Image (cartoon, rainbow, N blue to C red):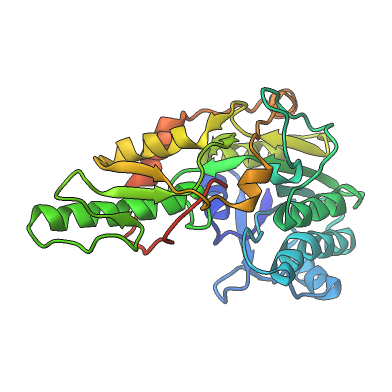
Length: 330
């Protein structure tokens, strides 16, 4: 089986590629803008004709689209999240109409949820911001393509390599800074107080982790479990539902995730939620929780990793990067 992964250099794309490489009797192809890619493509700018030519040479049995933008201006979000899937579908209809398309969508497409209730795939989407709206546009393009396609609506992924654009990744970067500050304070080097990602007190254990509003609830899912769902969606024979939720099926307070991650990091300071630092999206979407029954029935998939295992993997993969001064819930 020949599987082409687009966006393999990204966070989820990396996990998906690692998972699919282990499949027996599978030839994995990587598509992207890098000269090292097996198939050179740019979903934000390639024409359907150009992309169809590349796909015809690759001759994939399945295509997994992990390419997506989670930040940037309206043009970037629209080019990658909305135009990209539409162009990909047009090219696949021309070059590989029988290939299975697995497209990564987002739970942000649903918009605000009802507290205490899991959202199913039949829910009418109502994204609260531009990111969710552009992801929804991509999902609609895939659904209207007439291809053998499935969209996996992913919750909030957690795991090794989480980017600084995600809450877990940003908090990890802040904890790395706090760790360095405490090490400096313990060695007598001292640290400047205030104005940064953390504050300084009188010594070790008095650092502050300053965050935005953490009152929102999110459905966190391990990135390795997302990759597992992608594998099953790519190889499961027969027609699949057009959209499947991929999450944990449980809503957790963002505050709890931050506390657990701080515990994993051995952070001994205070976690401070700064007034007015919360994101607009967090205020608009206080609850997200996906019903994952359909994925279990269609794919035989269910999450295999606990949140604590996800956070352990995330902290183990940490790098000493500079984080924003304040972060809010996703």
